Image (tube, rainbow, N blue to C red; front, side, top):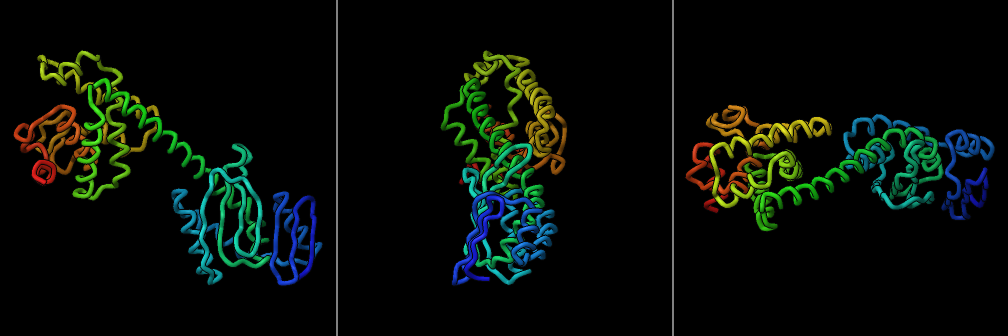
Length: 311
């Protein structure tokens, strides 16, 4: 269909003489899409509803563009890319891209998705008819993504603030991150999760006294100071549990003062200790507690010492 201009309750649909189409104005409901299609004898690619299955297998917002791209390639033999723009709140469609806002009934507009490719009017209308299902699937992931970013920002601030109490300089914090980054490769653990754990495990420091940190940093440690220091593990566990923190963070908090020889806080040995807990615990002992290689020998894998002390 060429050379038409439709204004259907504020939704503008134009098709020029060359077959290019432009849809903009009011974002239509699913009922409006079907009614407009009936009135103006337009076709709707209802096979796009099959995208539901692909999207339901996604576990994060980052996977959604991959699922969309895979679907269009397998279903329509089209190369399609998708991106999410949190700041964009627009509705416009044409042959080259489908820009659709994510409007949540509970949370308002959550940004827009931009799907780029080579689309027909039939496919664009199919995506509009599928819109409600699409939003219901991705809105929860977008909100979770925002909350995760907010949590990371809060943890970054807390990490710096708490470590100032422990008298650590910025260079010390960077060194801890460097140690964690190198050992993450050795243990094949997710680097982002390791960095997040490093920022989180010591949230329990809020329950310790400043003078304890002063003595630890100066080397003037008294009897009972180390036992008092270790109380931050339980304090941190209680805080993180109430925050519904991910399990890998809670485990890193609980077991980052355990050693492979079984002499640590929870008496776990060897592979019983989560690798993430072992990594961040090693970084803390080296930088925060100022432990020397000789003091930690046998408490951590030999590979750690080779990479951190020798390399």
